Amino acid sequence: MTDETNSVLNCDVAIIVVAAGRGLRAGGAIPKQYRLVAGRHLLAMTIENLGAAAPGARIQPVIGAADADLFQALAEKLPPAIRTKMNPPVVGGATRQQSAKAGLDALSTSGKNIKIVLIHDAARPFVSNTLIQNAIEAAQQFGAAIPGCPVSDTMKQIDSLGAILATPPRHSLRAVQTPQAFRFELIQEAHRRAAAAGIVDLTDDAAVVEWTGRPVHVFAGDPANIKVTEPHDFARAEARILGDLQDIRTGQGFDVHAFGPGDHVWFGGVKIPHSMGLLGHSDADVLMHAITDAILGAICDGDIGSHFPPSDPQWKGAASDIFLRHAAGLVRARGGVIAHIDGTLICEAPKVGQHREAIRAALASILGVDIGRVAVKATTTEQLGFAGRREGIAAMATATVRLPMNRT
Image 1: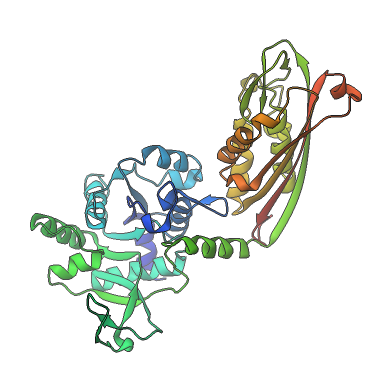
Image 2: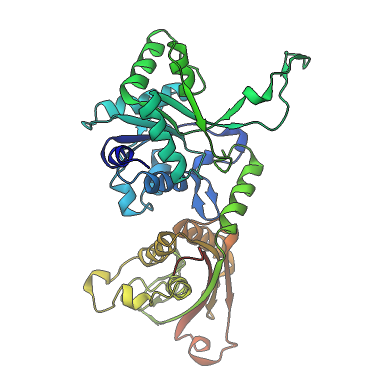
């Protein structure tokens, strides 16, 4: 990386993350960029990798009009260093071209002196540092540049009935990726001219520049920079992530709370009516406390009391999801994922069975994992011991996490 590129990386680059699409081909109940892949949101991975590759760049998200709550929930889990460099999201348009223009318009009014802008698809989470650096250098040199990979298959041009019209020579073809990189004033003017002419459905930003008659340079892309589009792409992406996380660890947790006056108990973030309550400095969610300790044990980072001392009055009556979110965040900060949670409640009453799925769903949401990675069980002590005498409730938990081999 040249000294000039390093200077730009630290002050004059902005990255637009286009995340306003619906991702219909991927299926699912929510837009694909908000779906979990190995316990992490697809869009969050993309933003984090972009922020790491260009540490001084501003990040401008462009989101769907109906996705503000989804984005806010995702953004709250991003590392603080990423959140501080991220502009507030803006709402995109009906086409990708309109969404990219919305991001450019937001940057033009941000008060920042942007010289180079990269425009990147939310569904490409595996963007590398090298690709970002090469994109910036190419934009500086050529004004407009995009990454492209040679195609290995023979390509056929067909008509509407499927008949072959032509066989383009593949040596001259490239499969185009993002980030596409431009001098800011050049791409902003190209988008403004196209919009003024009523052109709104060009499929990438290079095409917008091409429409103005200006040349676009193609530099070497990265075959690993895949786009998650079809349902099977999620399986490929998850396999790749988990394949990089070979340090597999298991932690255990145990917690006990005594019964006291009250009319409900908290199990895994779910309020359950009962003839008594549980005594504790916080909300006494015995299951969540055990899971929190299990996660902290897996990453060798103390216990719940060392992070949230019961002597500290700010935690009196606190909701235990604060503790569990914190533990999950520590795993993400180490570049890891939570692979599995298994919790067991030990009590005579209340009965857990009818609440099991609600508890699993609440824990999965707090942890940011798929519900299929959370198990909740309950047992009794056959009326033996304090739990059998209905003096209190205990919980045990195990947590399996996967970390990169070079992390501690």
